Length: 138
Image 1 (spheres, rainbow, N blue to C red):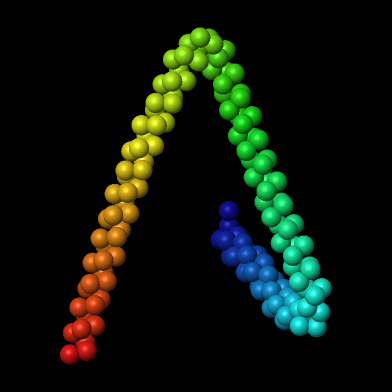
Image 2: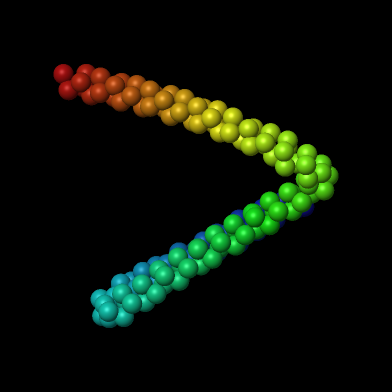
């Protein structure tokens, strides 16, 4: 690896960012002008685009859920194969459920403690800032 490679990579990234900024600088006035000259068409296109984005997000979410369910099915089948159906369904599944439920409580408790500590810090900073403002205004 020579010393010029990081400079080249930085240059490529800089060029990509510059191109993206140029496109955005051209696109924003164009969209604004189009929306002012053709408001109904712009609204319809915006609605269709919004529905398309939500549709794609929904389909990606459904795909993610399906993959998670397939993975769960595979893990369950492996567990049943390795431990036996009786052992897996009566003992292992209950132990896993108890483990998840007990950790969920502790995770919530840790989250609550974190939020309370953050709230105390915010209040402390607020009171310090208030005292400083009072000192400055005197």
